[in-house]
Length: 309
Image (cartoon, rainbow, N blue to C red; front, side, top):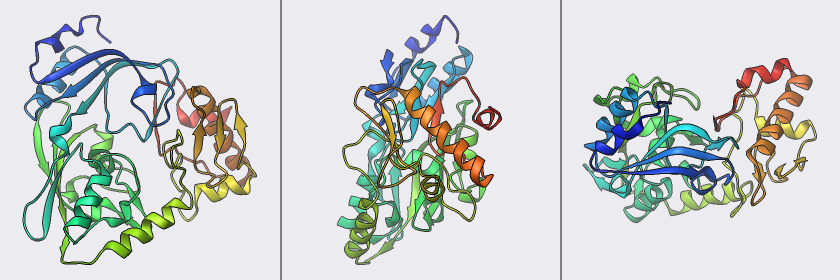
């Protein structure tokens, strides 16, 4: 990272904080300091911020709700960029579509759908995080994916170019997209909905199914690993006898083996070590390489190298 990030101070409509601990902004509540945290207050600021970061040679990551990442204890020598409350609004576009800002919480989207009797990506019920993050990783559950309901996506490129993309241009796949790969900044999305649909029972069913595995009030980031084709990461880890396994301040959930929980005041290295143990044990027994679903930030080792150790 450049030693002269002052170029950011010249941009209006943003808030800059320095040396912010990852514990305060991620659901795992572990990790070291982020050099710079930039909160963008209006849509005009995003292109300026991304161009300035590139010009200053500052590495950056897009931060949603911090519910799908693990930051190392050494922190991140770069910038996190996030959207403020202006980007959390939801409104009707037509009878069949609504628009949600990139910082809109998934829980707020579900609430909007419920209040307005609109069918849509209800399978997201109970999933934490923001719409921008959900779109980037093509979030899904119970056989559905958010990409199936998108009509277009507003993004800003790393060059500061503002684009309106069709879903067909985003290369959506299982927990992946062109948006994630190219670090496109999602500012908002249009979502297809079905008006006049009674959805209360459907939402409650999803929430009930999710509550059987999820732990309220715990420090974790949802599913740690992607499901390999034709199998389930949680089942593979469970079959290896790893439920309840503890490494220091982290342990594999007894409710679902694809969740790793961190104690209050825990360390990212303990979570990461438990990830490595789980993945290498599955590889040893089944020859399957589990890939992280959560974003690993600030770790020196490349994930695929753990299978060679």
